[in-house]
Amino acid sequence: MKITYSPIGYFRTQYTDIKGMPIQPIGADTVEGIIEVLPEFQNGLQDLEGFSHVFVLYHLHQIEGYDLLVKPFLDTKRHGIFATRSPKRPNPLGLSVMRLKGVSGSSVFLEGIDVLDQTPVIDIKPYVADFDRCDADRFGWFEGKSEHAVHHRSDERFARKPAAGEE
Amino acid sequence: MKITYSPIGYFRTQYTDIKGMPIQPIGADTVEGIIEVLPEFQNGLQDLEGFSHVFVLYHLHQIEGYDLLVKPFLDTKRHGIFATRSPKRPNPLGLSVMRLKGVSGSSVFLEGIDVLDQTPVIDIKPYVADFDRCDADRFGWFEGKSEHAVHHRSDERFARKPAAGEE
Image (cartoon, rainbow over all chains, first blue to last red; front, side, top):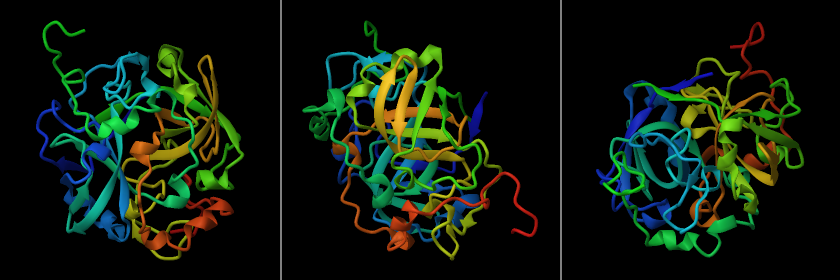
């Protein structure tokens, strides 16, 4: 079975290279970017600007192949890919919560950008506290590590072409 | 440009019909279900059980076509599809935060299930408070409505075949 999607638009961000990017929106708190929605979908943005935050789902277009066990940026041990937020996933689908600054025509202005320029956007969903906030209290191997994502920057380990000598 | 994904597994839930389903996990707080991950991806589940909650991304396989303006279950007015959580989206990709009860072999046991049986799963990601919790404070048209999702059940408006006379 194959699932086929088409981009509803594309990110315009300051990141043209995976290396040096924030690894999560909390490391990109004040970084602004835009989703340019394709004209045929613009009407779907109606009333979006009433929300302070959105989920953005996007295709990690620079990722090729996947690993079931990965050593994430924040740890020195390997973990199952589904226990990480690493991009080299069986389906390279990215998910971020971003602050919505405004909507103008087909442009969606966002803050907290941790994605590459030209990344294809698959969906935008409003963040609704009653649905999306949860009483999560166990964070596995992330515990004591996830706050480091504020300052941690991506290296080349998930880039399309691994550097010579890298595994 | 086409984006092609393959299921990493399938949901096993008690819902075989869209009608009567909870419309969000908060309406399905104690409803249990299972993701049966395909054997070739089982190793990717390693260390997942350290997390209390996960994001599950799934393909809304019973949805055909989309509307850019929809009248959601919780409102009487139309809104842009990207300002709603309605399933009839340009890319019918579902997102839910679910409580993780455990992992055994290739089975992921979950609570807070609001999806149809046999729904194809695209990705599982750990919920990490430092990344995913946000200070959202504006919820657009949902304000004063989203708590009703606890008791609201789906009707047939987003089912594959609209009933006669429905728009």
